[in-house]
Length: 201
Image 1 (cartoon, rainbow, N blue to C red):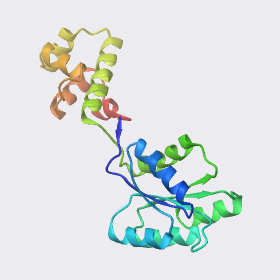
Image 2: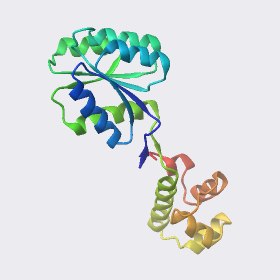
Image 3: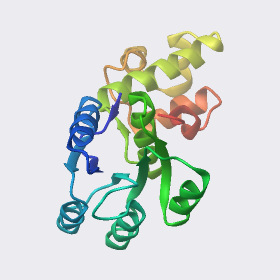
Image 4: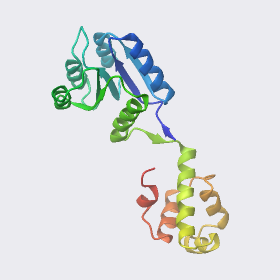
């Protein structure tokens, strides 16, 4: 499962109920949100601490969402900005993308769509990572699958890698983390690159 608790998300919407709903939704999915109904307060917060993603309402009475995007990008150009709007149209979508947003969500939005947009932004930045125990399990599962597809026993893989059957079994079960050296030996013995073994994890 992806680890997200280190990812700070700025939520900016002049409707406090939307701020609360989106904030709770993001918390439920492991993110660390900060919600603001006043864009000026949100910008002040962004000056003080680092946020990786911002969800911004396009139409707010005190400050236009496009201006908020520009000011956030001036503070930190790496921040991924996602615009939310109840008035979606091609012109506004094009304009916000030109100003630096990475995604555009129409209100009312489905909760899954909003979370997926934030996930996509974070995946593009490479900041969602897999929990260590889950990573070990996935690597072990992948090794076992390749071994069985090649009709190799643990003993045969052991002979090819100079690792004991016990060590290989522990790696396949995800109970022990394999060293880079061990992963290289296993991958080579299965006719794979280490990068192929780790792809998508």
